[in-house]
Structure formats: structure tokens, C-alpha cells
Length: 295
Image (cartoon, rainbow, N blue to C red; front, side, top):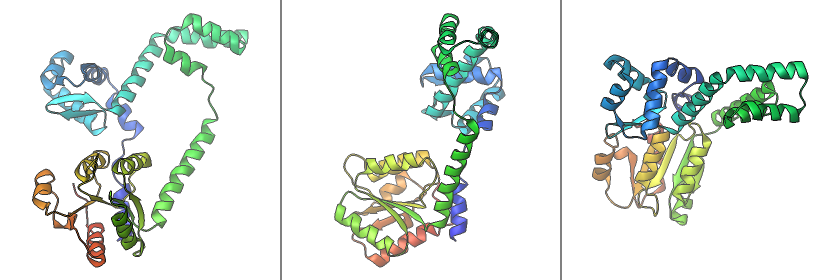
């Protein structure tokens, strides 16, 4: 069961560099992305189609590709560019500026080869020719050995996943009562689970984000917490990792309320306080043993 569950977690779709390059590979796609970026979240389909002059098929196929690649999101019938989309768009603007300055960039390379510039002379020459600050920063930056960086990065990724594969199931618990948190952690630690426990939901979310990859097989959270409650915490985590598996702990009968917000939740996703060690353990085992995670 562990092997299958592990495969499910690491198979969460990750957008690749080639996917993003493919999505923005033609001028019409770039024009659409530029229009969405400049619209500041105030652009609906009618505005975007009339501005870009795309056919219905051209427009919706590109929007679907943008959303799938994580560059664009839709909210209340309007489209806005995501944080990843902003990075991609900004780099695309730098590329366009570089192409517009390609003659000057060639001149810098040619003069450097012919004249053997010192660092200071090269910088002065660049300052005279290039106005774009981003391009200046890029062409004057000293890069380390890329092959060594790739090796170190690959080793880091491999080590992380190997460590996860060899460990037991990874569980996060978020509970604002320290004594209760200690009790829950002890329940699971005695069963051999890897448990990360947090009193502060904001710290839990920060750690979840900083992992930068699917890691937890299960998140257990109290519902009523100050600042960021369990429902808000789950919504934020789910927006990052759509396959996240959750159990809510509550002193009240919250199933109807939760089901109205998250229709896929069931009794298996709720632990009612107070709870015995046996009941807690059984709920966790059942949640982890699910064939799939809550959609």
C-alpha cells in the first residue's frame, strides 16, 4: 500500500519548462497573455477576444492551455495572471527587449573579442549602448559552472525523494492547543508515522509552501483556530496541492457545514472531539488507505 500511495503523491502533475514554452510559442498566445497581464484581473472572455481578434476556437484553446500550465486563473468570470504567469511574462518581455537590442548585443560581443575589454571598459561600453536594466544585469552577471549546478540540483532532488520513499507515511497535524497537539502526535508516533506538529496554522502553511513539492500523505487540522481556521488552511493548501488528503478535528458536529463547502468530504474526513487513541488511529489508517485523495 505504501508503494502505491507514494506513487500517487509524486505523480501530481508538475508543469515542465517545455510545456510552458509550448504554450507561449506563437505570437497570438503571447498577445493573449500580454492582454491578460495588462488587464489586472479585469478581463472577461468578451474583452479578451475583441482585443486579440482571436476566433472562438483559438481563444478557448489558448485559455485552456494557460490554465493547465498554471499561467492564468479564472475567478468570477474574469481571468488574471498567476504568480508563475507573471514570472513567465516578465521573462518574455526581457526576451522581446533582447531581440530589439540584438544588434547592440552583437556589437558588445564583437568589440569584446576584437579589443579584449577589461571589466571596467566592458561595463562602460554596455552602459552607453543598453538602456534596459534587466538586460544589463543579465549580460554583466558572472555565472558559475552550469554543469556543477545541475549536478548539485539533481543530487538534492534525488536525496529528497529517496528520503521520502524510505520513510514511513508523512503526516502534518495542526492544533492550537499544545497539550492536545502533543497527544495527537504521540498517538501517531507510536504507530511509526513521520509527524510534523504545529500550534500556529500560519507556520504550518509556511512550511507546507516551502517544501515546494508534494510531501504529506495526510494533513490533520482542528477547525476552530485563531487567525487562520482549519477550513481556510485546507483551502490554501488545496490551491497549492490539489491532491491533498485531509482530516478535520472538531468538538462540534460539523459534517453538514463541511459538506456544503467541500462536497467530497465524508464521515471519514471528520474526527469528533474527544477522541480515543484507537479511534484516532483507525481514522488515520482509513484515510491513508484510500485509493485516491479528495478531489
